[in-house]
Each structure stands twice: as structure tokens, then as C-alpha cells.
Image (tube, rainbow, N blue to C red; front, side, top):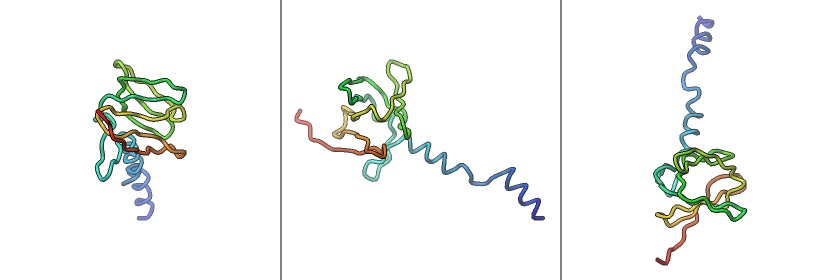
Length: 113
């Protein structure tokens, strides 16, 4: 009986991998306050690099542990987090920085339009 249970466990691992799927899904969304907002729903984004370059009209698809996956002019690109200073979403009143652990940090600002 024990052999049968072990074989079933290895052939059909129940619940294994769900944590990884959830972690992958969290790379596609950002928690702001108590609301989970997908990166794609933020719309057009400006990516400010540490070397002073600005990438405009980008749509962030995912933020992984080492890089940002974004779309520009219908083409997917990736960019290392170490090269990014911050992200600006023109429709929002916050900037997104990445700390030393490469986790997104939100900084609110007031726009004088």
C-alpha cells in the first residue's frame, strides 16, 4: 500500500509548483496599497536609465528578479534592473524605483500641471 501511495505521489504531485506559478504571476503585477495592479494595465511607461537615457512609449509586461520585460513599437525587449534608475507612468502620480534587493519601491509625488 505504501509503495502505491509513493508512486502516486511522484507521478501526480498534488500542489507542487503552485508556489512557483504564484510567484510568476506576481512578476506581472504590482501591489499598490491593498490593490494588485498589473504592469500592462499601467499603460505607457517611461524608463529612465542610470546613464541618463530615457526610453519612452514602453509598456512593461513583467518585472523579474533580474530584468524588466517591456514592449516598444510591437517588439519585446529586456533590460537589466541594475541599469534602471526608475519607471514613470505618466497617468499616475508615482515613480517606481528598485531597491538593492531589486524589489519595486513606490514614491509618490505631486504634479503641478
